[in-house]
Figure 1 (cartoon, rainbow, N blue to C red):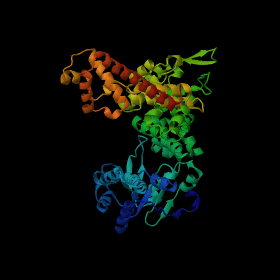
Figure 2 (figure 1 turned 90 degrees about the vertical axis):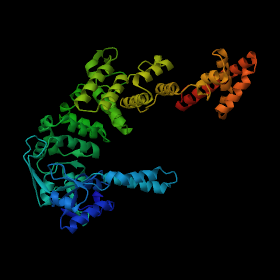
Figure 3 (figure 1 turned 135 degrees about the vertical axis):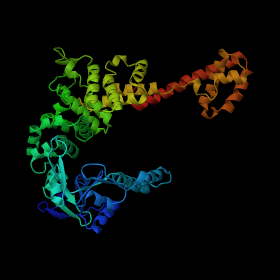
Figure 4 (figure 1 turned 60 degrees about the vertical axis):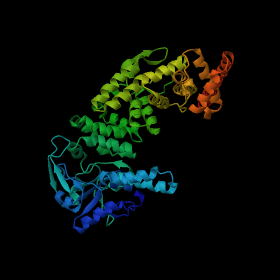
Length: 532
């Protein structure tokens, strides 16, 4: 869409066909009340890029009280004039769509339409309307000391952070207002501040992180003067709360280019203000199978986790899995590289400290630290036994956690520059995990048990109970539908009348059948993972 625009024009008419009707209805209300209303910021940028907006921000020459009169169901609880508009009370429409999607008789065509509508409904949960305004005085390098409402859209666009976010769009007339060449920067894939970059960053130091974040998210380069200004003003990050830095850091991590984003934070010098520990690994040679130093290996493991669309906690685990190598490095002439004894334990302690410093939730801290501590779970291939696998599963916390370790190991391997993500050894380990996790075939699977044989059939505790249960296993494994109480109870009555020698023969058949079935299940697992 960008290529079709006349970039030299300040005001351009453009037709965004997929603006929700609710937004158009709000715009009509403002028009009826003789007030201007524009879409602005990220939603306009995203539409120009052909991306579904995540939310809808609007700006107007109406004042907060006027906005509340024009719109119903609003809330106003801030010092910046922003009025929130609630379109779907208690998310009723969203829940209705979800209910329709859960029905089995929904056609694929209807399902696709409902899913598209659900995405749009989610964006309409957050609609904010802010009066045109000017800002001045930023004594904390984060918030304006003074805000004044304005009647001119030009004033409002002039206060915004980057040119690509300073484009306004009238949803009724199709008029696009671009005072600062935001369209040109979108086409050229540039992140550029509105007007003087030093002013923009000194007004709000968090914009330094936002510039890198947009660069990583959108695949844009930071324009030269803006980049120089980031380096010049990097110390402003000292004044920004760790919670706000964490939010921008997460967005870099969750972008499609986290490796690039973190490299920019290093090159501009801002990494030292929120994650200096990562820089301890720059130039730390690994040797052996590793072609990258520790720093670049870590970033490539993170990028691999992003390429795999892993969730935040797994991407953080990929980022921190070798964070302790810089502090444990000891040179080895034999290896022609460093060894890193117990780096996973040192790294786990560092990870916990870093995540707490950046104000992550206890759940994230616990999950990521656990993965870092245990990521060397099969360092010695000769010790991969089923009992060792079971110990690992217990140690890391269970089924979900052990499969997370496998995912982390894949990202780790890809971060070494290895194109093959699943070696025979890893496939073997996956097979053994699956084998260890599955419930072995056992008399416990029967719909009748020893306690019932004692209480309902008046049997005495002893060897005969085991014989009957194993005999029952033989017939239920051959014919699974026999595993119901009525059938089994009748068979128990028959077995109680048999001589001991005959009952023992049936029990032996049952034990042998169990062993055969168990081996068959294990072979299936091995075939699935292509191991012997």
